[in-house]
Length: 219
Image (tube, rainbow, N blue to C red; front, top):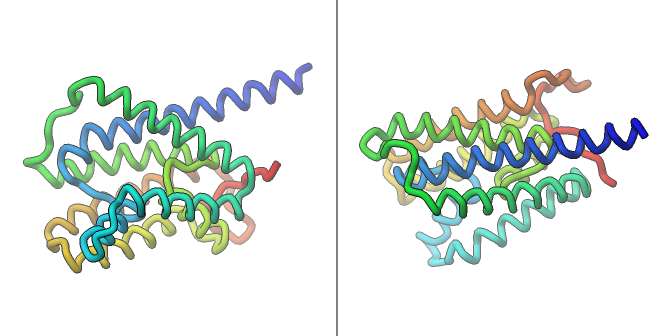
């Protein structure tokens, strides 16, 4: 009986953290990113790049890239990842739809891009970090970073930064350097915060890489 009770409490805690992280992330994107045009790297930046140079609609490229990243992560991390990622994606969509029913709750930081970049990074880093700590993903970016971390044993922060900086470097082909610099602030801070939240309180892995991909069950 106690075993079933413990499993139930663990399940409630796990999905509670996923809900909390998804809510924080969606709140930040709605109140900061979408109002100030502060962008991230990863899948979002790649969809904009493909749209600019090839005319491919993000409505097509974004889900295709997300699906590819999810399948890759599922291959490495198993069925538990798929469950948690689905829960996080649905929670993110639900929370975002909820925020859209209200006017923005934070001041408009459009005139202060540096502050917007830092504030946006805090919401992304904390929200995504909580979901990744559980072993889930809010989007293709998270799934790809988890896959790279699992395959290379690199810290998760390094994997996020690698994918984000690659996309931002490619984006210099059509975005001004000044705008990229603010995005660089965001991705650097959010990557570091994700790694800190994901790895805080965890024992270093056997190879000494602290904050790597979480061990995810396959059943």
